[in-house]
Length: 373
Image 1: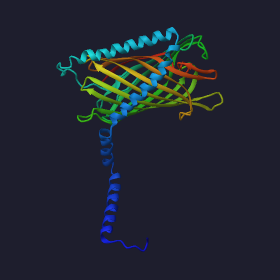
Image 2 (image 1 turned 30 degrees about the horizontal axis):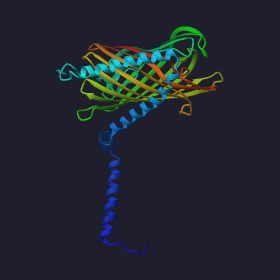
Image 3 (image 1 turned 180 degrees about the horizontal axis):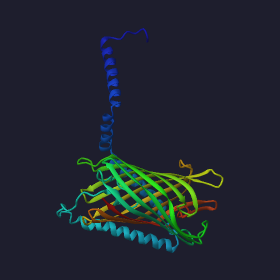
Image 4 (image 1 turned 90 degrees about the vertical axis):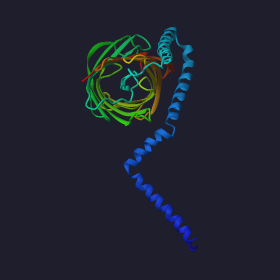
């Protein structure tokens, strides 16, 4: 082999191959090349197919979980039916209004999609230089027994220094009303709960040739009050999300997806940290019935683990419910959502229980009022 000579044609072929590899390597070092490559990947390599596969897979999991619903007690069945009826009403509004889609749509201005999907968040960043103040309340209701209600309100200050980055920060106010719930102490309290911050970065902007927008969100939190039990603790969390949405009909209909990973650490009595994590997927649909009012529905699948890196699976939950967004004035709006846990599992020492009412609640709600300036 080593004694074989290489003719001029083979030499030129090898030289050409080496030259192409070197050129490719130089392009790979160019950030502009990678930006073009990533954009092309999203547009040309079937990102829509990936989203479709996600939806199909999620609904298959939910379908299998819903087969367990026959064993629910009557109260659970009634709650589930109420949620499904409300969602059906929200989706019916899309069918009813789409029949008159031929009407003049000039009044439907561009909307910031971040707030229109309920617990699911859109990709919107806001206008450069825009500031906002808002109280945003999250409420949880219902455990396996007793009476349970807990709220967490974030007093948010939000500002957007440029068109790609947005910051949020503020204090957290919490409340708990717990009576006769197994595993939790009775308490009725209200007070300062902690601090939070959030950084959002626009990875892919929507444009004339691409209806897709993607944002990365990272939210560190510190809690001195446990979100579930209301006990005084030292807790640290880092919620990380990919927020994506598609504009199905210009300025009218939107489809959103979230991918969530949230590790937490809570200091225990020995000074060490108990660690846990949550993995979540969601999809949501929203439709503007008028320029000021947007209605829709969302679906969440959440999994809880012991350990920061999804180490030991302890249970899951499926939430579903309607969403509402109302733009009262150009600078003042409201968003609301209500979810009910329709399926899930909780792993205990005595076996697996229907629904996960240890790590999650039976119902949850969100209400936010915001003023932009």
